[in-house]
Amino acid sequence: MNWILLIVAGLCECGFTFCLGKAKLAAGWEAAGWYAGFVVISALSMLLLAKASKTIPIGTAYPVWTGIGAVGTVLIGIFVFKEPATFWRMFFIVTLIASVIGLKMV
Image 1 (tube, rainbow, N blue to C red):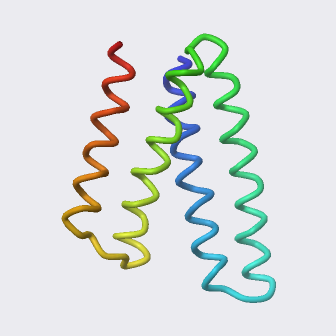
Image 2: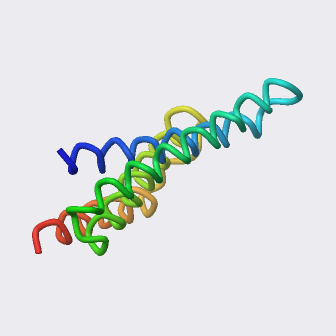
């Protein structure tokens, strides 16, 4: 169950970075709404990470959480915000995924 919470926490990290990206493109009350979403989803992400780390070692939980957030944020950047998907960018994302999987296995 705590692994599911950790995965959801990582997806929330993707969500709060998405909110930041949308807020950057907005103005006025729309931007305020995106910033409010950022605060709420950030808090939820941290709470889920804290809950999951009660049974998952923090040395594993934190890298998995940030890894999910980093990979998800790069993919959101590419597919939603039209950022470039260069060879080196994708190479390092793959190495990040491999590192997170390696941490889980050891």
